[in-house]
Image 1 (spheres, helix red, strand yellow):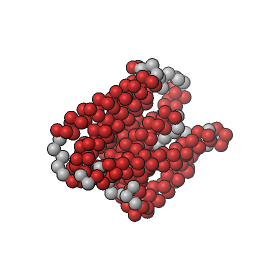
Image 2 (tube, rainbow, N blue to C red):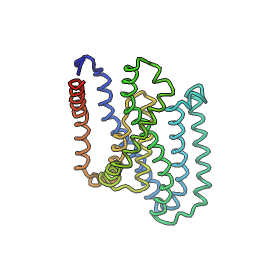
Image 3 (tube, helix red, strand yellow):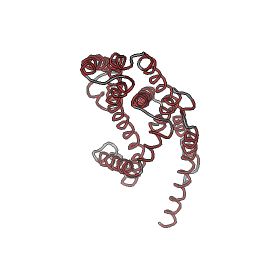
Image 4 (tube, rainbow, N blue to C red):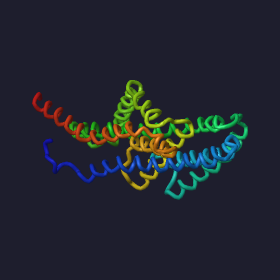
Length: 284
């Protein structure tokens, strides 16, 4: 507003906008592949309960492999414990092997019933783990987005560049986390309803595919240094799972509304921030 168009880093803004395209497409492709794999190896096997017990441990191992890779590469934990990506990969592979072997014993002892219900029963447990990870990743990403402007404002106002690196930054992150939690408790049900049932009908196997596609996309994009939007990735993954069952399984009218809302976000928030800023300038 004050500096004109030249003060905007258009390249970075373009990267953010591109993430809104790359994220959902990547999430959709991976979720599609995962769910089609479950359909092929489990549901279409003729004996889905037995196939679930056979391939279930593999999906357990893959789940913990992705989670461990993400934790070690996206947090300071990897910097503290390891000296390079090779060590992280070796440890994550070890986690994969151990969790797969553990899964063989755990699934082998489980009474999961028969038929398709048995498959959903097994993946219900897996989805709890993947959903928690996606929620963690989503929260971390959105808290950073919300708190970054506040950190810059405080740094400028107090003329103290150490705020971002000091313990005070943790209070800012806690504030952002509290805001997200409050949002989920109040209006979050609307988003849950849209993603959970309005785009396409989700079951535990489909939900697992959505979470796995989202987690993998976030991990790969982070390693490649690509901008990523967790929210858009989840939406894309849900659409991908729906497309795995055919185009008629996806409510295209809901998808159109979501795409329109994405396109509306930048100009709407831009206009609103200009109005608020100009109003404050007049008052103060």
